[in-house]
Amino acid sequence: NAGVMQNPRHLVRRRGQEARLRCSPMKGHSHVYWYRQLPEEGLKFMVYLQKENIIDESGMPKERFSAEFPKEGPSILRIQQVVRGDSAAYFCASSDGASAYEQYFGPGTRLTVT
Amino acid sequence: QKEVEQNSGPLSVPEGAIASLNCTYSDRGSQSFFWYRQYSGKSPELIMSIYSNGDKEDGRFTAQLNKASQYVSLLIRDSQPSDSATYLCAVNGKIIFGKGTRLHILP
Image (cartoon, rainbow over all chains, first blue to last red; front, side, top):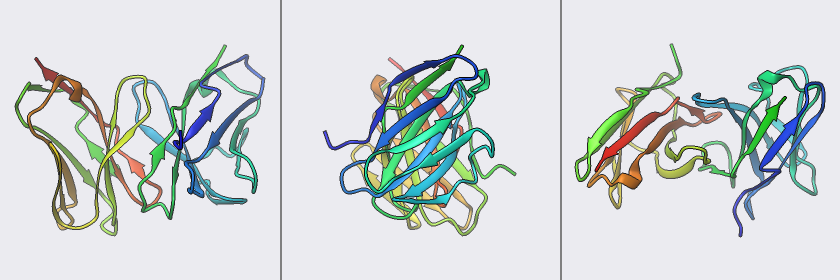
């Protein structure tokens, strides 16, 4: 399967814990995007990365959230000290060029904060 | 003004009819436009992309772009119950998504 992979698919964390979400882009893609979707809401852009670089993080909260896309391995979205409001579906998408190119989505990680 | 706007619906269309979904955007410099379909509990799936004015057809789907009026639409011909989903319009840059239109095909 050469599609975008995300894991875990479901993640439960208690308030104050850390959440790590992983995304492996489609084969041949070097651009990764993270989105958050709250129940009954649209997709909200969070961050756009290329290998080893954050290109645009304007949609990501300044505190507790960070993202990386190392030279080797998957992209990681990290949420520290989670709160109930972080409960959402987090989707990763990848493309083979700049953001004007078509993006393909992974299955998402459903984060529940108890 | 919201950057990408869609009617949230639900839009109910009889099976076999044409479903028409509309989207307006605010950034006149936008160059790339996408339609995604999202079934409940699933991830968005790219169904159409369009970059120049006019119509683009792919099977039962036709995307229409009018940059002067800043709108993009999606037509679904011969609507099937399996087309019932939320359709997201997206515009390039950071890929700004509209909130989506819920389409319900009535059997």
